[in-house]
Amino acid sequence: MGISDTVASMSLIPEKMLSISPSLAATIGLEEAVLLTALNELMCYSAPELNKGYEWLNVDAQQLQKHLPFWSIPDLQRISASLRDKGILLIASAPLHESNELRFAFNETSLFSSPQNTAFTKNIENTKQEPEHRKGAKYLPSQWKPEEETLRQLGQYNIPNEFIDDQLPEFITYWSERNEPQFSWGSKFIKHTLRLWREHQAQETKLSQQTKMHSKWLPTDDAINILIQQSGINGNFVEDAIPEFVLYWSERGDASNTWNSRFIMHVKRQWARFTATMEHNFEPSLIPADWLPSEELFEVLTLANISHEFARRLAPEFVLYWRESGQAHNSWNTKFLQHVKREWSRQQSGTSQVTTNGQQRSNRSNSTRNNSLIDELSDRSWAST
Image (cartoon, rainbow, N blue to C red; front, side, top):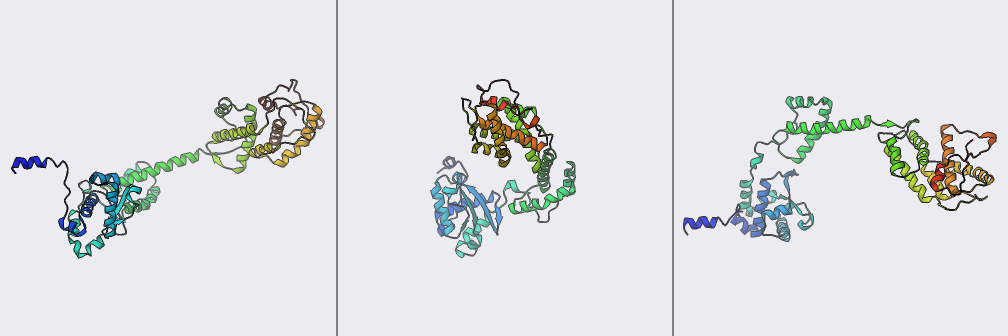
C-alpha cells in the first residue's frame, strides 16, 4: 500500500480513536476493556466528586452512547454490571434503563492489589491527568480565608463584616464537599456572599412593609372594585364582612403586607359558601311560627367567626317581629343572616343601640314581593329606628 493509499484510508476515521490495552482486554474481556477505557477518559476530562476515598462521576446515558454509539442502553447496562461483578467498578445508581445515568467510581484498591491487573493499573496511572481547561485551578483549602482585596470588594456593597464572616463556614463546607477546583476562590466567595446579601435585604424589606391589623383598617378602592365590579359580589355583603375580618386578624395579632389580598379571598370564600347554601325561593312567603335557621346558615356564620349561641338567642325575637309585621320574603335565612351579622358587628364595636320602646320598626315603604336575593342583601333597614 502506497502513501496515498494510507492517507485515503485514514480519512475513513472521522474522530479520535479509542485505544485498548491488549493485555487488559485479555484479562477482563474485550467489551469490558472498551467500556472501562471510555469511562476512564470521561473521568479524566470531568470533575469527579470525592467521597470516602473514591472519585465518583455521574454520566448520563446519552453521553455514554455518544462516546460508544455501537452499543445500546441494554448493552451498556450488561457490560457495566459485568465490570461491577468483577470488582473493577463501583456503581451507585439504579440500572441504566431506569435512572438514565451511570454513577460510578473505579475500585482502584481492588485493582491495584490484584497482580493480574497490572496492565490496567498502568493504564489508569498514565491517563489520569488534569484536563487542559482545569490547569491552574486550585482546590479550596480547609482553612481558607478571603484576602483583603476580596473583603474590600465586598465592602463596596456595604455588606457588614459580621454578615461576611457568617457566610464563610457554609462556603467552605459546600465547596470542600464538591471537591471542585476553581481559578479564583475570592471571586467565588464574592458571588456567594453577594447573592445571600441580596436575599437578606429582600427579606428585610418585605418584613419592614408588614403591618398589624388595626381597628380603623379599610380595604382599598381597588380591592372593593375587584369584589363588586369584577366578581359580582353584593356591595353590602362586602361592607358587612369588614368588621368580621378586622376583628379576627386583630385578635390574632399577625402582621402582613397583603391585607387587601387576604380580604378579597375571605369575602370570595364567604360569598361562594353563602350563594351555595342559602335557599333561593322565587315566591315570597310569611315566616312560620316555628321557623328556625338552617344548619347551612350556621356553617356560614362559622366562616364569619360568629358564635352559634349568639345567633340562636336572636332567633325568637326575629320570628316574633316578622310574624307581627306580616311581610313576606324570599329567603328568611338570608334575612336572618344579615340581621345576625349586623348585631354581632354592633356588639363587637360597642355601638349596639336599643330601639325606641324596645321595639324594632321597619321604615321601608316598598313592597318585598318581587325582591331578589340581591335585593334582600341590599335591604339593611328592617330593624332600623
